[in-house]
Length: 272
Image 1: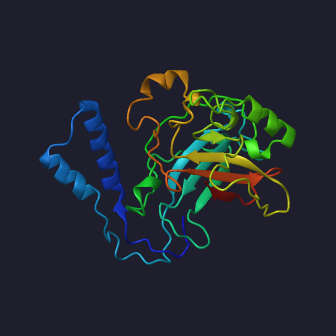
Image 2: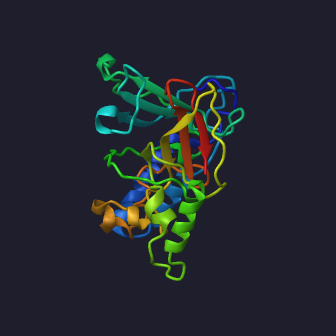
């Protein structure tokens, strides 16, 4: 539950967000624009309003399920002792106290889950549709990453600079093609391309490690070398690189850090 005090009565209806996406997907499959009646319905679905007038800022509301990751299928998922499942939830509203996103990490043991919920509790209003994930299946693939270029030793940075063909736009680029993979991922490195390398505070006094990257895009025009082989045919299809329909930090990325020694300690969030 999100018990933080913030406005919860106004936004978009969750049911409308999902209906609008079904219509969008139908238009794309048809390859046609919506007719007048469909366009009118589409515009009605996108209207924001005060859909929960009786809900006060201090009233708790259910968190929205974002992702579920099993350690058995993700080698890089380092779970706390006795746990093999990570569930990620967040509040679908912005502007929480001191940060934009209220995110919760739930570590569990699958052996303890005897009766999974058939239907998850959901609040009918969301702050913005970019916080509503569309159902999809994760197909984990292990890839090797290399540290962000500005964090490499100076002599190695110089070698990368000499290796880079700055005159050829189509030549491989260390940062875009070889260093930090785009898209959703467990573990790996941070792409500091927006702010430059920064400090990652440790609440417990220990070092932090990157646990999860929540990305708007799985790839873009600058890093298509990372596109999986099975998705190569989809590169030119509109929306194919946004399978989750989640958009964070103005179409950017959200990085979730945890304690390097105990992932059950308080986490830290950064957006780029």
